[in-house]
Length: 119
Image 1 (tube, rainbow, N blue to C red):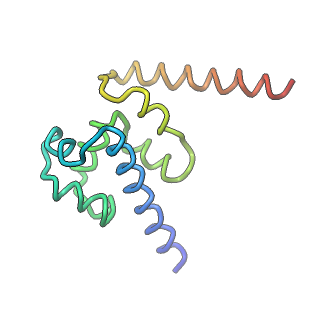
Image 2: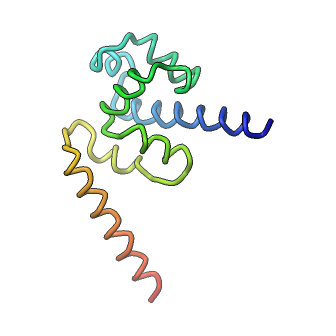
C-alpha cells in the first residue's frame, strides 16, 4: 500500500513541477497552444497527474520547458534541481550539447562551492 501512495505522491510532484515551470512562463493556455495541445489536455495533465497523460504530450511539455522527461523524474525524486536552470534559460533554444555543457558547469560550480565550505 505504501508503494502505491509513493507513486501517487510522485505523480503529483511531477505535475506540480510542470505547473510551476509553465506558470513562470505565463499563461497555461498560451503555453498549450504554443506546443500544439488543447489547453484542456494540459490542465488535465496538471490536475490529474502526469502518469495519466499520453507519453507524447509529456514529451512535448518537457521539451518546450527545456527539460527532459528524465530530468522531470529526477526533480520529482528530489535528486536534481532543474528549477533554477529552467527559470534562467526559458525562452532560449539550447542544443543537447549546450545543455550538457551547462550541467557540467553547474557541477563545477557546486564542487568549487563545496571546496570553499570545507575550508
